[in-house]
Image 1: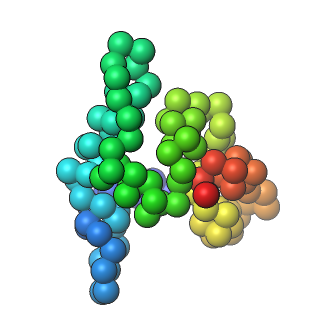
Image 2: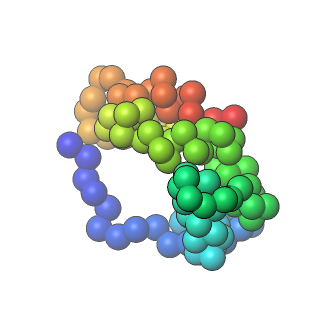
Length: 112
């Protein structure tokens, strides 16, 4: 079993030289992404992915269409760890697993 981090990574903003370890966007941009996503998902709201949200998805290399599928069907798509294939490989080696769970769906939905 993988260990849960004792704390979450901080929001560190846009990529730059000497980048600290953390999430590559600001907390404000993250809140806008959550708001945009909620407005699209809810039937009683109108919405679209804004420019700032699209920038986050571009940095994460996730197409907007995939983002909407991931956010609405996450539990059906993924079982266990989720991430890039190299990250899944590292995780599985760390927890001494021979198989990468949900590797095909990670590759399909988490990359452009």
